[in-house]
Length: 113
Length: 123
Image (cartoon, rainbow over all chains, first blue to last red):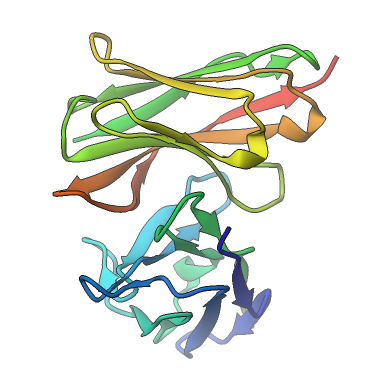
């Protein structure tokens, strides 16, 4: 199984400041034949299902604010919230869909400082 | 608009079978552009991928469930079902059904989830 490791486990950021979450996979999730990274990011708020934010490592899902961006390739990825808003307080998970079984990171909790 | 809704008993006895259904509305479960599956989340913990049902009938289950799992689709009812046998307290979780995109052999991530069904395993 591909192990997904996120850092940090939690972070507190002031409103309007940048939040950065890292995700490292135990093996590459870049498929060479199509040059796509099979990496997604989800946001989960209490009592709600996860919501897809980013897929193919850097493609924003429809309706997701542009303050959310994804970057990285191969084994190292980053989710950036450029200007943290109050409604961004949540758990964030990275997820590989490169192979089966699909796996998730342990989650990163984002709070307001 | 495509929507998913899980249903099933909230309490299951240890060693018995956990059965859940997921009703799909606003679209066809037979669509070649979709695949379907389940993900679970123990209370206060992270996400665990359970299994997938692909267009054409192929299924793949998380090996961690050790052969206890069966996923089926009833196309006449637009219904996805999960059966997990010989449950223990470790199977207590919120169970989410989900949909993912399929495009010409390329499978995307889960992009739509139900609200979830909490199942507690306890006597």
